[in-house]
Length: 131
Length: 118
Image 1 (tube, each protein chain N blue to C red):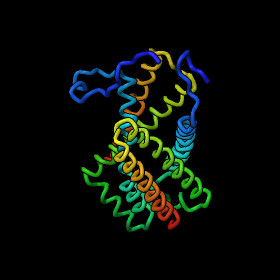
Image 2: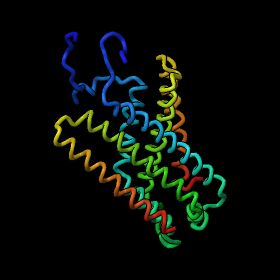
Image 3: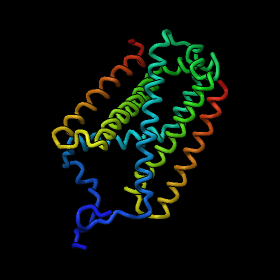
Image 4: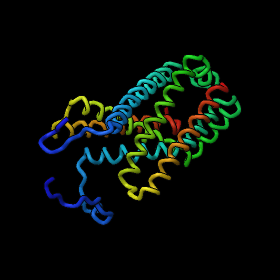
């Protein structure tokens, strides 16, 4: 066993100066969005319940979703799902040895941000009643 | 199996199995998400009847349940990875992992109840 330097996590104070490359940014947001969805599962199930229980609860949900704060939270949830899904597809491709070299990996990370950003913008337009 | 010259990666194999399960459940979720999206996009005007009737057929209930079980398993592996990366105190990690499992089972049971009331 060769001598190894002790492993340590990056500290909070380092984070401010550390410029994460785009694939790294995608990666930590993939983790954050997954954790966010895990934590908001009961809230999402509650909305799902409201949408299905009855005509009245459906209307109640619609009234709820006209509140600006609720709308912002819904767009946040949409972003989490869309980023996690798009980044996940990229990881599946990487696992199949597609686009593994650095320029390709950077390019695909940008594509993920562009696609999930556009889809989130579309979701925001729907949530805010523009579409 | 030897990778490179030093590392021997044989062991209990639970790492590989969970890694693979996370990919498999991801594909299940992706397919379900696409099916649901197509269903909504082609539903025309969305009101309560159109939305609720989506989940009435037994086939859709089963598909949704499979997706939810896949989701629970997928989220378990992801959260377990997060706890393993950031929480190094074994006792605390164990409590968090147990909490994660209970949280996911509770959500799953609730989801079944919501689904079978429609």
